[in-house]
Image (cartoon, rainbow, N blue to C red; front, side, top):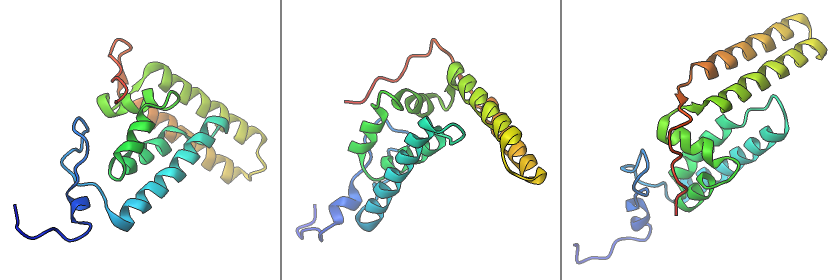
Length: 161
């Protein structure tokens, strides 16, 4: 231990993420970067919440980015997100198993297919735009279908204290 006190803010750069997380050896962000991460995480959580209500706007990717940012900036807010009744189970599955439950994949693929079909059939886009929407939807469906499936018997990681 050094006889001289650490400069202000030094303790923040030495903080570590809570044990049990995949990236626990990385230091937490501090100062302006921390506030930037927390602010961006708030925006991404908001977009994820909009995605629940607005078909066609994805929810899970926004929440995964928010979780990543909070893991590196605010363990307390990260725990709150993982313990959320709405978003927590999917985020915990991703954190523990790097995959989605079969029902989650099915809902995502069906919702994407329906929204793409409605957009192509009723949208005021010219044909090249409709083809672009259809191609983007097909890519999204392909991407989700390739994600690993978490077995229904796999235990959910319990909420964090």
